Length: 328
Ligand code: CA
Image (cartoon, rainbow, N blue to C red; front, side):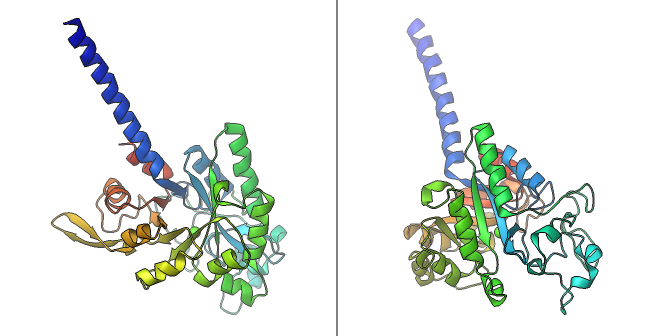
């Protein structure tokens, strides 16, 4: 009898341990990227959004990069300033003929004077995601890539964790037309801060395929490179075969992965399968709890994309929610 009880108890603990391990494995195999920081909760790309993201312990925190007039990589999503700052009030005379204010026309010091707020439509003034942090409230500033790296590396030291960075070179053709080599500047800064090889916990991404290839072959970086792909574009395997010559992964929009829903079950395009066959990782963008698309819950979206479609990771505005759902 004693032996039986002992056996049952042992089995119980063994099962608990196994579930625990399975959970851990599931969590560890899926890469979570805090998209523009914890941008579901605080204005995107502010240091506040980055600190909050850090506290949620994603694998990586993202930085979109645009150069200032004096060649400082600024962490901001667009080459324009009008959708996330009060530039139209502070520097009303500095817009170009198209009515837009460009990051590249302002020095780092000038950019630091701007107030950053939740994303809005500059024509109507309306906040883009109505239930997020209220537009115009509190006080937020722009910052540089170097400031953000020092913040994340500093937190890595003070917390003993090791969270990576995931910078994106924005619109290299536009920078080039304005006489600036953004990739070279960024790759040099990354190297100065110790990011030179795949093991260095930095993934560099870009939509421009020619530029990403140049980053590998001409600028000769050994960093992990992710080729972002827009929709709807050629999804042929031949294109992926070319990506393999310089990139380590792809970053498709999640709609490129979904095919259709039949009798309650999703079918998928060949993209993830083809990429995996070629040894490319797949990090899909962007999973938002307040923009579900064709899904009825965020949980369903995570389940379908991360597990059924079997992507390797995702960009999300809500790293805490994705982590929570992976843990189920
Ligand atoms: Ca991005």
